[in-house]
Length: 117
Image 1 (cartoon, rainbow, N blue to C red):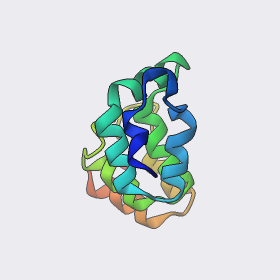
Image 2: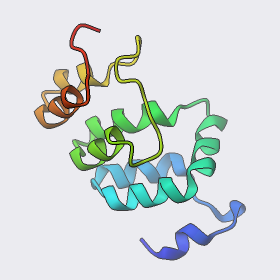
Image 3: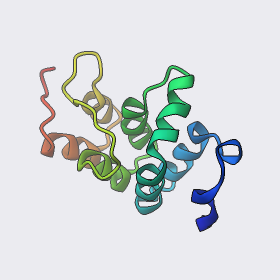
């Protein structure tokens, strides 16, 4: 990814809703961290226009793409976006376990996911 991606004007910015999953799918933790920390307000605005929530979108995409490095960055707070992983109705821990992905399941446990939520 070229550095000029981060210097574009608002009208030239890509659709973050499609760009973020490609970074997650390739488990490009550093690029994802750089994008979100440099453009967080714009990214959140792009997601909010579509009634999506970035804080839910990221962990579920990490699970779907088995992107443990990106999941760890999310859980450690490196992305500037947080999610209460024990929030009723949002259960990325259970999805990771159901998908039989032990690395991310263990990460959620490490960061305090409760199994009985």
